[in-house]
Image (cartoon, rainbow, N blue to C red; front, side, top):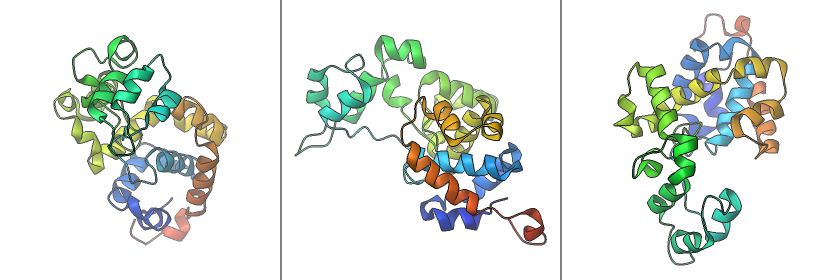
Length: 221
């Protein structure tokens, strides 16, 4: 397995999450093999920008907004109006409601109420996004829908880890990791191959942090 102190050594910013990671990964069977554990940690490392970001930043320039999300999600006029400029940060609240709201947000994320785009923007180590995903996660983790009223819970250490674990389990990623490659896992996690080279690098670093159970016997997790 990989210990909390090994995770912190590889990624110092993971300190608030390391103990929860070890605990919840073990409970979800991710710690069952070196490959699963390394794949999971490599993915969440990149998704959370090295454990430094558990709340989505939309501080994009106009050009980056159009390039990242496409004109079917945001018009060039709105990108220029609300995007980051040389003298001012982006209007992130407005951008979230444009990007994750409207017809696209209702169809793909369940964002049907005014302000849902901002309220249910990406949070956690996997950047959980959208009313429907928050609802499903809340039911699975807490047995109710309370996170819909307190979505910031997903950014707290246990929630940040649990939301990533939930996504991993819900998408059968233990099995994909067992039989596949970093690219296979990335396609499921990311919907594409964004950051694939970095995901490979960090997966290998976490793989190197693994110690077998005989080595760990008699030591604290």
